[in-house]
Amino acid sequence: MGMKKETNGMDRREFLKRTGATAVALGVFPSVTRVRAQARPTADQVIQGKDPRLIVHNTKTGVLETPLELLRQHEITPKEIAFVRNNQVLAGGKTLEPIPLKGWTIEIIGLVHRPAKFDASVLKELPQHEVTMVLQCSGNGRSFYAKYAKKTGGTQWKHGGMAQTVWKGPKLKDVLEHFKVEVYEPAAKFLTANGRDEPSGTKPDFEHSLPWTDPYVRENAILAIEMNGEPIPAVHGGPVRLIVPGYYGTMNVKWIGTLRFEAHESYNYNQIPRYRVPIYPVEPGKFSKKDFTYENSRPNWHQKVKSVIFAPLDGETVKAGTVKVEGVAWNDGVVPIEEVQVSTDQGKTWTRAKLKPGKSPFGWTFFETYVALSPGEREIWVRAVDKLGRAQPLNGGIHWNPSGYEWNGADRIKVKVS
Image 1 (cartoon, helix red, strand yellow):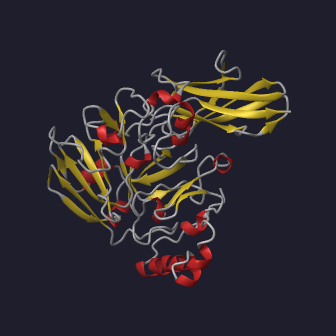
Image 2 (image 1 turned 45 degrees about the horizontal axis):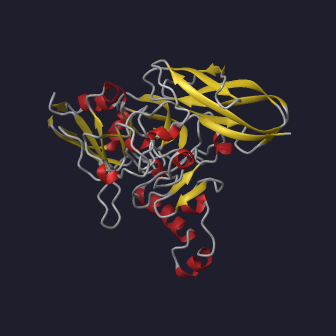
Image 3 (image 1 turned 180 degrees about the horizontal axis):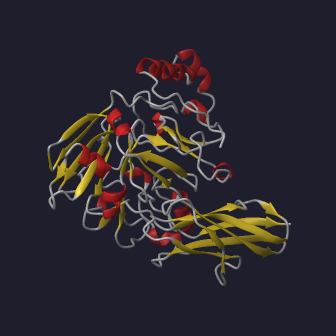
């Protein structure tokens, strides 16, 4: 994939030296700032090591989107082009360089017998589990709500707030067993994860709760120490990131410092009212995230079934005749993708595409088919259906919510046929 190996075990002095050099390159000093102020920084200037072709949404925390023309080139998304969504930033963490495991402390507390506090280097000594999965921002596709309902707040992602990545580390259940941490059952219903990043200004510290009662969390959650076969880059949550396959990226908390077992979801602002959607459909514009309660909303946990066309791309010109349509589909991994349907007559008729399962139930399922297109402007629609019958709605606006989370409308593109 053209990925460069990072130095494993880089000491803190060298890490700070390198990130300090990045600060100079990004224009921390007044003389450089005056030059940079005239042009928006490119992705590699925002985060050291990133491909400059990424779309920059936010320079302060580092929010980068991967154009589909780059994303579709790799089965496993290289770190250089992987999207970034940060709510907060770890000091010195806007880089692809890793942070050493040794000296990084993690606590497991709350409704447990024998709480644990340990150095993260211990995680390398435990049995390792590897998973290939789709990592997706819960706001991915948010911009499309405006086409069907009403524009929402937040970063106006298209499809590039996702990546297919490989994570490795010990399962959380094995870590608990190793340190003889006994979770009080059934009182402990939630696992709340907090990273070592710091909030900015008066904003609450970022943390998320996951349902410990969900067997997918209990069985599949890992404390990842590797991404794509290397130590996790700092900007992607290293040295330790909580990984829960099938869950939206916001729940895969970065820079893990504390894990708490609790009887209730966190009351943190980032758990409610942020990162929630209504349980029942609401009228666009008539509902605010301030209206969310634990009873009328749910968190961004399991990913919805979804598909994205990789070729042709929206707006491309293709030759009349037989055109190959290909892309990827995925869901939360609970059941497989059963079919991907393609339409060239705005949903009047559908053709089933050929499927190629990916490397794991949590990863991309690849699809391809051929369609006949005559000259003019034509639309291609794609929707996925899984074995539970969960399908993408033709009108994704039906799931409108004030923050624009969990977009999964049928993918639609327009092409010019010559």
